[in-house]
Length: 464
Image (tube, rainbow, N blue to C red; front, side, top):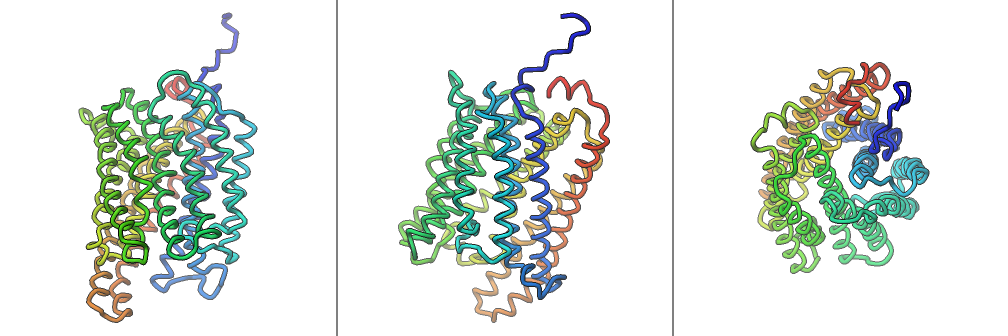
């Protein structure tokens, strides 16, 4: 090659549509902002400080659904799709089936999420927990999930030889997510009423986490952690145990959301046993990741993306231990319908999967735009405020749930439990403001990096 010839573009960079990855991340952060504001509105309502009281469209009940659906389908789904468009082509050394299809899915999915928000605020929610998306949106969302599977599965199945465990998780997630969404949004609505429909909704609630979010999250961790550490996972055998354990036990756990209901008790007992079994399965995955970094834990602290990853992994251990406890019939008598469950849900969705996705963005955004972060200090504030706020919220709601359960169990009047809860709810507002402040640091840093970031470094160019 002559000295004046342009340098060859690395194969991995040619395989990845980097502007699309960045577009997904920006969309995810936009919905994260909306989700946080919706959560703040709900928190202010609980302490009787709602600044928009009396306006039906700003009813906290409606914005609570925007909060949950925006987190799942706006923030998490977009961030996952962005990370998958980076990881799958580089892992398989094959591009996705169609780049134009990828961009169509991006635009169409934003339309689905925005339409969902509009439908929820217009009062068109369906009575399915975590499946409140209006009925006219469900077929569109299901078609979008099918297109995602069509676009990603071919490069994975065309790979000759053994597949890395990340590809196992990805393949399973593409199939499971489509089936889970169809089950939860169509069967109770049109085909299985009453108690049977309630059982299906229970399965949907938990399978949305276990068969959509979990396999994609763990698959991405199995991809990014070894790459950043530049060493293989501690145990290949444990990675397989984790995958097959998830596939076998997780679909059976969902009815633990409806203990002490008319659902047959043998199904409730089965859900309790399966949930406890899942916690042991997850423990094998956690041990595998901790074992990978055990001899040099300082690396996981000094590298900011790894710090996000392993903070989320530790939180996953906490939530799984909590879940095994709270799913028992005895403990349910204390914490059922209480804020304990709300704290558990927040730690899972933000403290685990949200942390992983934020860590992925912190790792990838400089590589996508070919420049360093504008401010490392802002990234440190982002981590510190977010982790501190999430930890405070988790323990605050945990103790609030116990106090509420004791109050209800002692047959005090309902208003007494509200008076007991009010101080905890004020702490919740404070914790939420800390989380929001952390994300503001990150949003500002992303904006300044995109606009005025410093020159690209050799390390970023070499490993982009």
